[in-house]
Image (tube, rainbow, N blue to C red; front, side, top):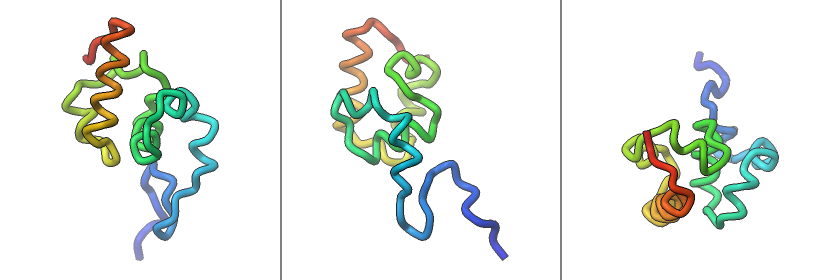
Amino acid sequence: MAKKNDSRCAVNRGEVDLSKYEALDGEWRKVGLAAPARRALVDAKLYKVSDLRKISLVELTELHGMGKSAIARLVNLMEAKKIRFR
């Protein structure tokens, strides 16, 4: 028998529990990221732009939910704040 949802993602039976993200994805909402990208960042424990220096661009692109548009927006934000990926 499989264990009950061991994933860090707040998905239960195909439904996303958005309340688990509301307190953590505020900065990502402000910059206009789509919900899948916001959830991917929160699941990776990346809560603000400066947290992106903890990962590489390759790791960012491998996060489930990160699309080309979200990545481009994040790269632009990082450049504006003179932040670099690991």
